[in-house]
Amino acid sequence: MRKPECGKNNNNNNNTKLRKGLWSPEEDEKLMSYMLNNGQGCWSDVARNAGLQRCGKSCRLRWINYLRPDLKRGAFSPHEQQLIIHFHSLLGNRWSQIAARLPGRTDNEIKNFWNSTIKKRLKNMSSTTTSSQNASDSSILSETNKDGPTPMRGLMPMFNNNTSIIELEHNGLGIPASAGAGLFFNTTTATANANGENGVFGIGSLNVSIGGEGELFVPALESVSTITDNVNLKMENRDTTDITSYFDNINTTTRSNNHGVVVENFFQEELTLGDQWDLEDLMKDVSSFPFLDFST
DNA sequence: AAAGACTTCAACCGCCTTCGG
DNA sequence: ACCGAAGGCGGTTGAAGTCTT
Image (cartoon, rainbow, N blue to C red):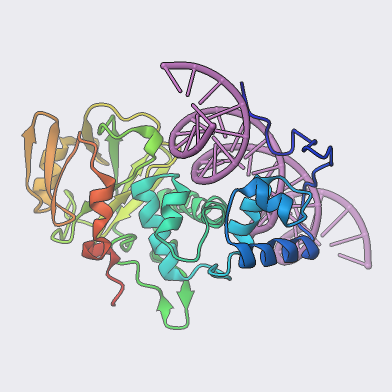
């Protein structure tokens, strides 16, 4: 039997109608002072004892997303934006896990920011990079400040006018589509792609760039739905080369195993294409990720 | 100035998981 | 082991604000 949903059972024991919609300042005050005096307990008790005509879930949401004293306010900093993009590439739409790694930010906030801002930027990038390869595109995912574009080292390498289009045929890497994971290819040792130029990679309608340094980042958005078998890199000149050849060309060694192709130098270690990697392991020491070096 | 389009974000919805009896 | 209540989460909605024409 399904539980009565918040808002569906308009009756509590007192047969009192529960309020919905925006919270009034008075309600905020009641919840805030109750939480500060009593701390978190059973949320339905909180609602009742604080004298709120709200369901427990509504109180929980209000506290977590708005009233909590440790919440950070205001716009996301460029650093936070980079972290969100990076964590999303690893964790997909697991907003609560992303939020757990961004102190003072809520899952709802990050989700909204992603859906309203970053997703749009990625889509814009997709369309602009295929039509005109303008150097100004390099700022697509970076916020411009008075010192110029915020460094996006690794995440969003520079476009240039000699960009060539390479289609990454993404038939599958064994990564569950539900995870929404993207791929980071650490190409810090690479100076060129297979054409000897910087380039742009595309999956479906989404293009991402690879520059002379940093990482090739292949974000998995909804355009990447199924991931099963093999990876091929198709060059713009319609030659087809396999991923092994490609990574050999960018000074990244590869070898085969039971699961597929192993590309060395991922996160300065190795990652098997075809394996599902342990996200928690990867996240243990984020500071070791070269693309999270914001010291420049 | 006004109307429509677009954006943002707080809050709700509904499903899944966890917990305790 | 089972069941119901509560918590947690991601997706979605819609009101309010902002921008554009």
